[in-house]
Length: 227
Image (cartoon, rainbow, N blue to C red; front, side, top):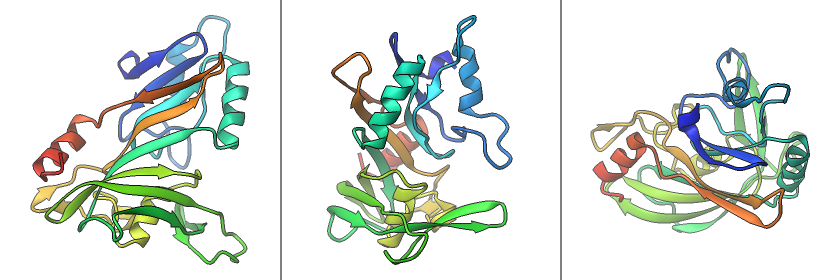
């Protein structure tokens, strides 16, 4: 767990979460980041508290609070959308048209057995939730593009569903139609990485934390000629 720490001070602890590790418990989830935070608990004190989540297969910056007042402060900041989140994603078969813009498509939760999906729906659907994502193309090559994504709302699977709705699903996203092979190269996992997080700090001012893509994603970016 110490190897995941990317920043720590008296109030907060930020981790660079690997792909494949669930943020919190859910259906069938036994080993989660939330449980592993006990490794940072001080004698007689609570463990750090998760402020937000990342999908299990998404890597990148995730923030925790080390104190109860800090957790309350950051939780309220998140609710009023004072956080700025930036993601990197590889999509196929190329960049969207236009190459940058805003996606405003309401989403609804769809339960299928033990699995949960998000679906684009009409704004007047009884279960509709507002969902807004900003995007821009950073690079493109044959059959793929590297995207920078900034969700303005925090719906489950939001970026994945929004890009799939544009016909540009994220590579490795089998759930929403993402390619598992790009130009003859196997995609090892969901190619979505939370690369930066900006937020107001409980002690005052603002903080921005950045994490470069992990080795498997960086390798695919290079192999596809996107970096």
